[in-house]
Amino acid sequence: MAGVRSLQWLNLTRHGESTGNLAYQAVHGTDAEEAGITERDADIPLTDTGRAQAATLGRRLAALPAAERPTHVVASPYLRALDTAKIALAQTPYAGDLTLRVDERLRDREQGALQGLTARGVERRFPEEAARLKQLGKFYYRPPGGESWADLALRLRSFYRDLEADAPGGRVLVVTHDAIIVMTRYLVEDLTEKDIMEIERQPIANASLTRWRGDGSELQAVCYNDASHLSGIGAPTP
Image (tube, rainbow, N blue to C red; front, side, top):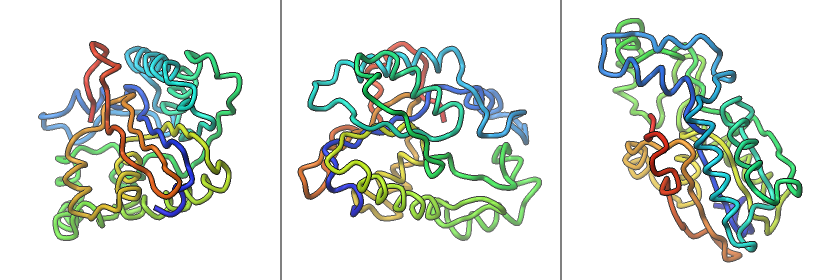
């Protein structure tokens, strides 16, 4: 993908477990129409487990060879991602050499009028939207006031173009959300709608690591959704 070819390393991680993750888990498989989240999406905090996951992620980053350590760190402005970045970096010996930047283009996908609803809630309260989703497919469907997965690709293309200009030849850590990680893979690896919607069926684990290594002309995949460093600390959350 044009916009990241000059990077030496591109590392992405999802935020640690959040109270929003637990809220959706609690109503999964029930008849509930809402997850019961009271905060706005930007203000949903980490759980204690999420903070532990972030610290463990930081220890993995600290163990990277010097030639692979991040030179730039960019995070979503949402609280759960920003706190994950701060906690993780505090575990590294090189945190003082880094400036944590925030970029709103890394925020989670906007759900618009469907924010906080379960699939059952959408079917009951917005049956016409449920039908439109079925007709258009998940990749191109845009909820009222929200974003489609294709919309994410547009803002990420812009983000990565700017990133390459700001950090040519850099080693970048991006702390963000599951949908952003999935769509970054779509862009970097030139995947199709069918490819990425199949990949998206596997949940991105909280505080997992996805990495690409650059050779000056393109990025090569190293690992995807790797949570081996989190053994025993929580489970992947949707």
